[in-house]
Length: 284
Image (tube, rainbow, N blue to C red; front, side, top):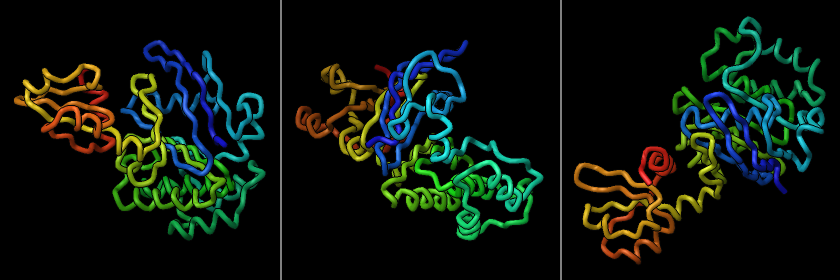
């Protein structure tokens, strides 16, 4: 069963267009949504949550139509969008009191257990918290709703590596219950190499791919060669390429097949970041 199913989602702005985005997020998994800033990640999330109107497309969450069953579905979703949160003048105790009044599934017991786990003060104003503590407070608030699905937009951006790793561990703990799912939008691809099961990559409003992360890491390769060897490559084997001063870097798929086809060439196993950058900056 899919926790999220997005089909042909499209949204047009004056200077940007989201075009026919489709992907599924299986229940009990972590999906990483990647792309450079301005690629359309936040627009996809806001479109999914009915925060912006879309021209076309369907979104189902827990096999329900989000537009028709929004109120019911919202009870089972925890959302963290950037730094949008409560007034900076209140503390965690006030957050608890507010959420008790507006959310049917809110658990004060769970909220305070997360505050303890995350080492967050109960009576310190939000404005006096560090950026990492503010983010952990947002995540604690999202988790205390006892959601089945977490949707997060750049939750680790700008945080130091220690805090980032703490937050990634929180997400891994969350999906130990196989009924729980995470959709995590980020441009920090090293985070996703640690925790993601699937990767959806968008660039300039278009879907590049949505695949199993392990398949991506085992299939793609970066072929390094001189100009003579580059000229001998079959154009159909080249996804993107980048010309260096004296050599070429070529993004290929099914690297075992490519290695057999072109004996003697060097093919490195790439990172997700290298794949993304060659797609974005490389030539076709």
